[in-house]
Length: 346
Ligand code: F6P
Image 1 (cartoon, helix red, strand yellow):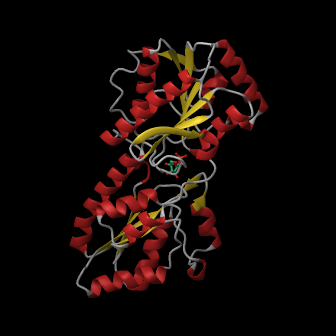
Image 2 (image 1 turned 90 degrees about the vertical axis):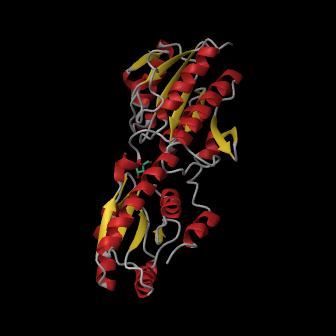
Image 3 (image 1 turned 135 degrees about the vertical axis):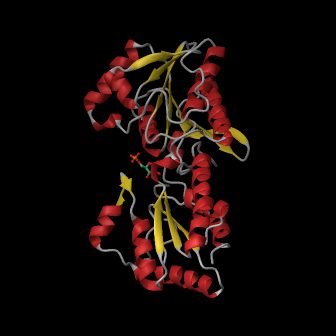
């Protein structure tokens, strides 16, 4: 059966590069004579019948734009039987023959079930600033987030130096420390705290004090939003732990680390939470290129009838892996990558 009509949706947290991927899918599909329907606001568009044709004009000028022109949400189709029924109705109404799902672990987990349990012909494209999907060396969005965090660290250096302070920078990354470790290396941070390696606050303070003794009057500490103290030196109250480690909204550990540093070292500490700035704005050339290559390969997989796959980059090669593998658990920071960041601690 030749494919004439496919859909595309973007789900989960937005990230730079989504529009580049949408553009690539529409352009490549057009070359095969395939029409692309933009499903608005993630799975919600299929549930609520918010679907519109994307053409050369609707994708014009979107390559450098952040966000996603078709919107996003974190709605899970498996939250209700009614959702699944409405999706089936709208799928048939529009005559969709395949769906390209652009998402992170949440959205692609749902895509995996749509393929495996519900029989939908689905292809995934990995996007997230967190870079935490298995089977791909990079997700698009990550490079831009690291770029933003690195520029922030560069700027914090000068004010930290003038005031002789410790600057704590809290970055995103969900349950992995990719953004923290990468921006620490690129920005020349003096310590990076990541979820994969529980930290001892006494060790952190020791490093900061040693720097002072060496004549370095300022320091930069990068803290991933899910970094946790080692159980042997846990200084968080149960309330604080409940407040900052919510899966759906992490954040707040940076301030608590800064408070503790001030208390234990008597050095002034300030905190900067980078937050959503890391996800906003224009994608780097790397992310634009990666998202474009992913979009093209996703359409090729659709045409070849290779469903249940996620496009990926391994080394410099664009390839694909089973969706099921991609979402089988977070891709944690590699030992080598962490050791590289650690080499510059102190
Ligand atoms: O997964 C991307 C991400 O930006 C994480 O780094 C962060 O923890 C989370 O999304 C924030 O989610 P929300 O947009 O729902 O606040």
